Length: 467
Image (cartoon, rainbow, N blue to C red; front, side, top):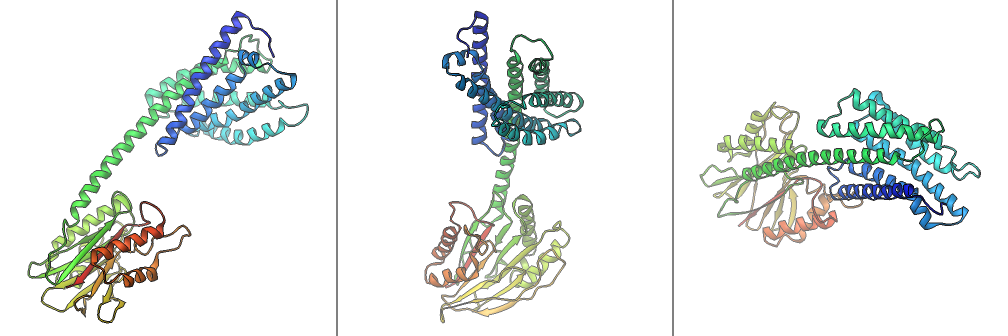
């Protein structure tokens, strides 16, 4: 350990400490940014680790710090070992970040160096425990550092990695670090007289230029993310408008609807097409997939339903018309659907199914839950015809129409909510008002899910109660 320092060494030591503090602040800020916005902070973690480790290494190797701490020969050996260990750890972080910023590198050089560094670093650190040769791989590390700097320089010159403005700054920082880094590593290898340790100036310049590139990349990603979020919000508003604003006001039937999309926009859809002659229909559809593509097809189903609403009195005819209109228009996706026809003047409900989970009918008289089975293939496979079926209903009866998102909610063990549990909840709460029954079903699903928000799929639930 040094016991005193010259004025020149004092000045250099203070500059080193200032650089270490500056780089540590950059590294901590980058890691904090990663923790706050992981979705778009793709480079901030690797940069933060790279900058922070280098700052710590620069600080512990500082003559002023060593003089202040003092210590025995054993303590000096420990200090040197810590410095070497940090040196080994910096290399894989540096190559990880460089690969993230510039891609695989010219002819895959950065990708290859990163794989080598991931193997070399733990081997080198483990080898430090061998008595008599604690720093046996520092020369190899120096050669790998030189190789990384060369790969970064060539990649910046031979390729166009994007982010033109920030890349110009990185090129300038790289030129400085290559010049001083090569000189320092050659000095450490005994191949070049280089009396002063000024490699940290090049690395500080380099890391500062990289911070500029990271900030530029982060802001670009945030801008794209904000644009996507705005578009999703717009799509959400549009989708909300294609859903009915209110349920039909019918004398003999009370309708309750619940709609819980998995994401901002969903592939579930429901509507109440009416012929205006005392008849109304309930249509529930589920588009395969999720997100914007499914929502676009749900909008197509809305338009097709509106153009064939004259068939609302005949569920089979309405689904047949939808199948014919959408045939070959869905881009390989499919739609399942259920249509109910509600006739104020009759004591029955008519229904038709296109590949959808069958509606459930709760009979108030015998307190029994049955499935309204029967139906045809999914809409979108081919143009198909669908039959209409009918069943008598009485006051107090309920018909529950739902999408498969109700059944496919999973708990922590990966078990489905399933038919049996769904049927049990309906039977236990069948005497409650339809709105309470719908909310109870969703509540039991959330309890089963065990999470505060969201299901595994879009969820639509429509309950028709006979007055």
